Length: 83
Image (tube, rainbow, N blue to C red; front, side):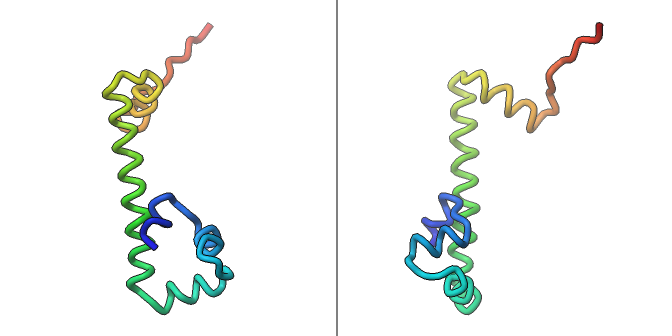
């Protein structure tokens, strides 16, 4: 369940991967809190992993990632020239 969450599957996608209907999946995670927690923990761990890779890319000199992270975290923005 955690691995499905890690790749940011929606509940509909998770149900399809598991071969059950969406309602069945929703009922299952509603009735089994440990499964719901595993799914959510997987989602959060997946986000952290992606963020880690983005920062590694920036640290390796990826200019696009450096600009994007600068805009996201330190308020940098494109300079607009007024004519």
